[in-house]
Every structure is written in structure tokens, then in C-alpha cells.
Image 1 (cartoon, rainbow, N blue to C red):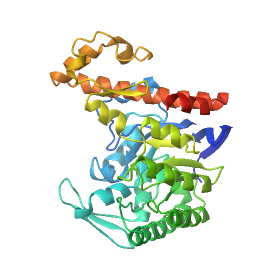
Image 2: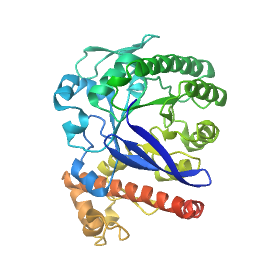
Image 3: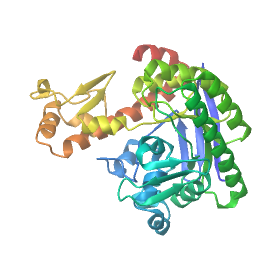
Image 4: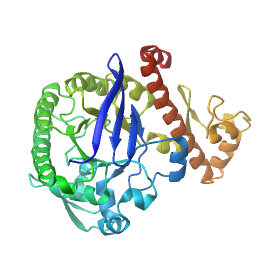
Length: 367
């Protein structure tokens, strides 16, 4: 079995302070993962992520399979080596892309046959070859192949999808264990079932019987809204094993993270910091500032007076507004970097307050 260990160091209510050990190093949790879908974090040189302090990033098996391709990654020794990232990486299997590219794919019990959105070439994803791909990618945490449904969807269709994901999970776990010596990273199961409690509980029961190294809550942030998302986390997270790491997939607004940590979630990923940054939106305190707004044109104050990050303290809102207005790439890059720094500090503050036993107070102050 691969080198992987998760230990809870402290609790504050349901919030957990933990540490993950992998081949490439440690991950302090709760943790947020910036997204390098295709082996690159948009507008963000990887060295800056190191400087900020991030310990884990996410990439996507589906996209890496298409570009640069597994042959290239094999020659480079994996995606981390390819992109000069020396720390752990988690890879999603492509289940979300299976949902979003519905016009280009066909699903059956064997797997997913799809056409590349790039050149139309035909590819097949199966529970087994997704593991082979992630071993070539050298993923420290590998997600099983699953199917994700949109919201809203009927109970009947969500149940059918959930059962297919369970069938794939059983095959994936068997293949992973049968080929233990070839595996680079740990394998996580994914809890599906939409917004339906009975389906989520069935998915949990079946996934727990497979004894994955960690568990993810999937199928959220697909249009269900904040209240429904929290409702699902409420009846899902407490049923997951206390000693296993818990990952909430694709959820990542600051409020969402704090409320989910409060309910026992350990790791998160989302495109929000860099996507919002590219559109000129900066996270400051509990607010989001649209730096494109004309009111910032002559604002000489730093982007964030509370931050020690070089972008946040050295560049004025007026200058950043100017960069966005002239469409200079520095504008989206600077604000994306600021947002990533903001998110890292948010997670650091969360961990600090769990350690001190003051997380509930921290949560109330943020609200």
C-alpha cells in the first residue's frame, strides 16, 4: 500500500485539525487546493504558490489525458515534475467532465466513451484505466471514476447514477488493491446521491465497506444553492469515518468553507480564487471588491491593509483598476495571486482557531 496517513491532532466541536502524510510531504488540514486542471493554475506561476505556502493542489485526469497526454507525462515522470511542483497533488478522475460534456459522451456499466472537445478523438474512461492514468500522472490522492448529476434531478435518475458510481467504485477498489505495488498514491471513494438523504446514506454504506483511504462528498456545487449544500453536508459528514479524511469536492466560497469545516470537512477545492481574480474581483475581509468598478479609479489605498502579501500591501486599488482597464495580464494575475494568498490565510486562521479552541467564535465573527 502507498505511503499515506491521516491523523487528527485536535478538535473544536466537529471541526478537526489534522495532518496528512504522503510521499511528497505533509498537508496541514483543513486545507484548500488551488486548481491546476491542465497542469497550470491560470495566471499563477507555480513558484508563487510555494511562496504563499500551499501544500496541495488539484489537477484533472480527464484534461491531462487529452493534453499534454499520458505519453508526455510518463517521459517527465508525472504532472508534478512536468509543472515543477514538488509537493502533493490530488487528481479528480473526470466524473464532473462526464456530466458537463453530456453531448460528447455515452455511459454504460463498463465506463464512459467520449469524444475529445478539442479534436473529436474518441477516448474511453473505465474505473480501471483511470487508476492506471493517475499512476502515470503520479497523483498522491486518486479519486475513483464516478458519475455526477446536475441539479435538479429526479430521485429515480439520481439513484440510477449513484448505483452506477457504486458499481464503478467496487471495480476501482478491487483493481487498486490487486495492483497495490503499482499504485503511487492513496485512493478516495466518492459519496453521491444528489440532495436525497436516503441515497447519500446508501452510498456511504457501500463506500465504507470498500475501506478507501479517504472519502469525498461529490455532486454538490452543481446548482443546488448554499442551503441545500449545507443540508447535504449536515446529513453526510457525520456518517463518514472519524479517522478518515473528508473532502468536499468543488465547494469553495469562504463562507462555504467555514461552515463546512464547522461540520467536520477537512479539504476543499474550487476555481473561485483565480476565476474571480481574472474578472477583477478581490476577496478582502468578509467582502468581495470589484476592482473594475470606477469608484476605485483614484483609490490610492493598498488592496488589503491587513495582508502581508506583496501584491496586497504594495499595489493600490487604483493601479490594479488601471491594469484591468487596459487589459494588461498583470491585473488578473495580481488579483488572482491576492485571492490565493487570502484563501491560504483563511485556512491558516481556521487551523489556528481550531487549535486554540476558538473556532466557533471565529465562525461567528466571520458571519
